[in-house]
Image 1: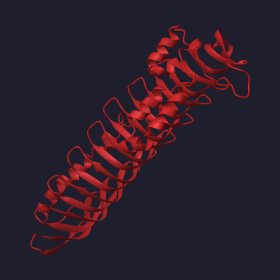
Image 2: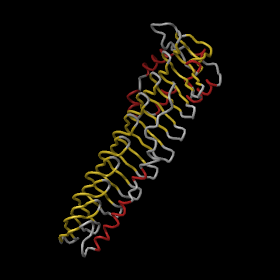
Image 3: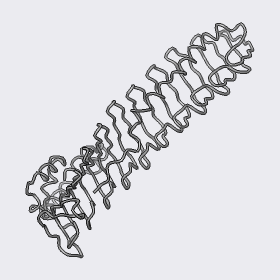
Length: 348
């Protein structure tokens, strides 16, 4: 139905080629499909279909599905009935005393579900609309979002991808009202594994995530033109990495909690190089300065200060100032990552 058509439109050329059948196979399939039952409601877009259904349009009599009929009582279509001890009404197909087949469930609290039911629970494909306007359009298993589906939150945030027992798990795409967008792996509702994130401020990160934070190896492109490539821990530059500036300046070495720390080397566009020890973003300890002609001079620092090193301190001051205002702490915090474990309302 509509889902197959939508999914087919997203296939890559290679996938389309793999799925292409020869003419004889298509003719055989067409002949086979001609005898299959038609589900008229699913030929529409899901939201419009739901709107038609809940407004009282009679479509259930057109459904000739044999879903769930094998090995049991036949499905029976009945008029609207009160269910769940008066908490909801249901109109659709039944098997014995249980909702089974296609139907519409409307709760007194405003929640609505239209789609497939199995033994009294949402199971198969269905559309859920919460009392506050949140919607889920996708696959269900025993009253839980499970499989492939699209969730739209009332604030405009969306997620489309794989679900496992009401949690985002697998591959998916998450978008936010401020323009932020993530495509990648999820685990138990969190960004987890490889992914690509573009923040609302324009910064971009590609790499590993863990529990909704940058963690592991990754490349971060700041909106001021700087690029960091290296290790991350709990959303911060931590480990070994390199930072390059638009003017050609480049640092390679250790980082700890977003600051240069440990052994590191910084190179300037004019050919000067400094190799030495850093602590909390400041030069600290022994190092050597190599000028553009290759002359080497030992240096000794303490918390970023050295005698007769005013020129070098001035050049380093700008780098340190940039790191004190690292935009990734702002770009990758609320609201960009504010929608972390948001789950839809209790399902039917």
